[in-house]
Length: 359
Image (cartoon, rainbow, N blue to C red; front, top):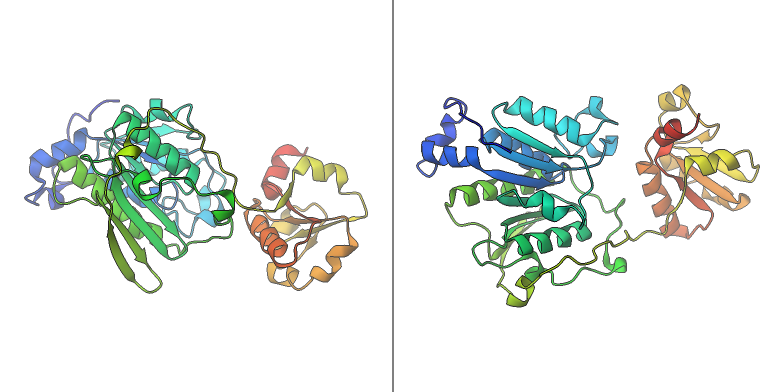
């Protein structure tokens, strides 16, 4: 990791005229090292604004591929990126925004085996993850390494942001001491979020990151920001440090399963079983996708499927299929919650995975 040798004064003139920044502050931004966890809904605006601001070294970790269901909120990507590596697209897009900076990509899943090594070289850790295990993992790692932690979270119309572990301030565990139990976690596939909300929270995270680098203003350390976008109610809750939460010396266990009673079937399993007359396959893809390739299932609109459940009991297995396994997972979960079907299955990875695995 190296510092850019120069920066273009014209690129940053509109922020350099701010008395809190100037040329000296811009040099600080140019020399800063920030790692962003996740290149999704929150990571997208964070990464774009930090790149545009001239943060000289930006690490980004993500191991996922772009899916159609990402596009309503993950503004780094467009339709032509579907199926491609997020980290590859992110690196290209950020360099196109600002070719003067260094982007350090990590195309891997963050875990207790690699987090300390990855974040150790960075000044600030920005958490754009979307699950509790990763949030607690990040918290414990930044406490052990004494790194400032810029937090953000979104769910439905609710957004949250804060700065943790900064200047003797509180940590994430000072607000949330223990990981929630499995039955307290909202469903991963059906919780949902309004697409513009991550843009709001991600912008706050980017602003807090710049303030920490420049040591200006008053950060959200010791304050927990919440906004209800549906009613536009904003509250800022004071948070006090809990010294017991700052004594973490080792990483713990963080894996918590998403609450879901969905049964999955792999393409290989279905390939072996689909000639069984007691199996019914419903494909909820578009007509064009179905025409291009199908596995001899019945194409049906999702809304019509919910009206056709009376026939499910006639089969040993009812398989719901979509293009990438996201929409079908949500449909199966809703149906199981509604009527407790025990013969309903989601095709893991959808037709995309089928095409990868089945000759």
